[in-house]
Amino acid sequence: MTNSCNALTYVTRFSCDIFGFYVAFIYLQKGIQVLTRQWESGDAAAYLSITVALLVLMVAYLCGVLGGTSLFQRYVRKFIEDYGTPLTIIFFTGFVQIGKMSSVDLQTLPTSKAFLPTQDRSWFVHFWDIDVVDVFIAIPFAILLTILFWFDHNVSSLMAQGTEFPLRKPAGFHWDIFLLGLTTGVAGLLGIPFPNGLIPQAPFHTNSLCVTRQISNESETGDAKGHTTRVVDHVVEQRVSNLAQGILTLGTMSGPLLVVLHLIPNGVLAGLFFVMGVQALEANGITLKMLYLARDRSFTAASDPFSRIQRKEAVWYFVALELLGFGLTFAITQTIAAIGFPIIILLLIPVRTFLLPKYFTREELSILDAPTASPFTMESVGGNFGEDVDGSHIGAGGMNGPKCSDRLDVEDSTERGEAGDNQPRMRRRSSYQGGRDDNDIRESYELYQMHGNSGGLSHRSRSRSNRP
Image 1: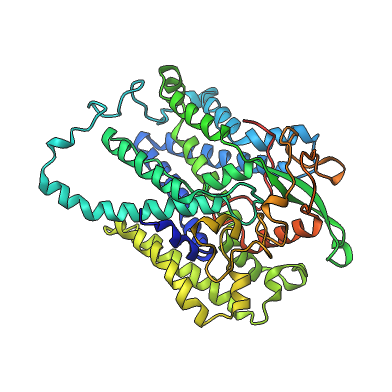
Image 2: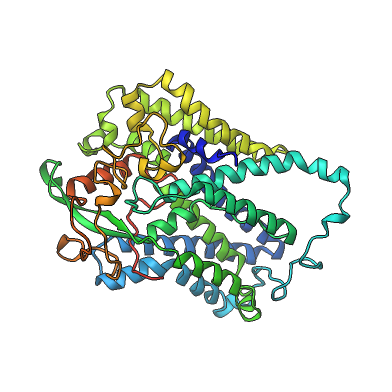
């Protein structure tokens, strides 16, 4: 009705990076908070929980690292990369039952009865018993939550359709927010948490559906010339995996699975929070810029996009502004006014649109910041701010490539991962009028290096095996 999603045309990596950075630290903070509560069960339980949490972080992270190496056969390392984190949780849930550790009273994940609310109440909220005064008191908080949900859901949707993903199907931001309104209303009547898009889970899901290929970087000189890089070739776009996730989540409410979930120690969950936080930070745009500033210039690749910035202090200023935005957002959440932090997040959009161009040149902003999604994705909301939506210079993948109608129609039955003999294993089902050649893919990879993915996708391309 209001077409509020059209405001997404002003959302760039600046606000997305700050929000993704904030969410990453919230995960880390949550993990620490979980561990601090373990002292209620004694010193032994607390120190064992800390040890297990750190082990979960290290093992799960190493599983992701292994997927980007040449160790073992491809199907082995792909299995470890895909399922390393859940298998780590399962292993350490049983690990704490070995030897003398079994005698330590560890706090575990609290659960309730099957298909019943956690509190002693009926499923349906008796809203007719609420006083009128309480309704008006709740209105300001409802407005703040609406702002948060609008930004969180739309930004997570943008990140899941970022320029690093060569998508072929158009976006549906207006339908998404309409559906979010309906599900939020139903959730309010049932008294359950409101469903909405999440960072970094939404971009993680898209990244898990990416098909990658190896390309050689001929633009480098010396030993780096010809170095192969794994980049995204295309994305398996489907709805089955989201449906399966919802069904599995519903299944966890059943009695047998609730018993299993109750066995998971809180220390293991804290480790999972650490894994999510570290992965969210690893390739965040702010992190990448900070690494560039800290890196020895003699070891900086000539193709690094930041090297093209003439005024080097511009990178410092831009990173300082991003850290300031993150600091303000994180600081307010530690006070009694924490409910107001969505206002800070929302103000980042006009700051980027109207203030930053006064202090940074267009060329600097094109490298330091950029639209989160491609013009193809943003067409339904009026395109990106300051860009024409004609598809003539930017294709569906967000780089100099063909229009959506000219792209390869890829059969998604092949196993996802590195393509054998450095070529994508695909079968053409339509006439080829212009595909993504190595130059197009290399440019996409440079953009990926330039901005990260803001929501915390790993800098390694996490190619997953094809699964529903």
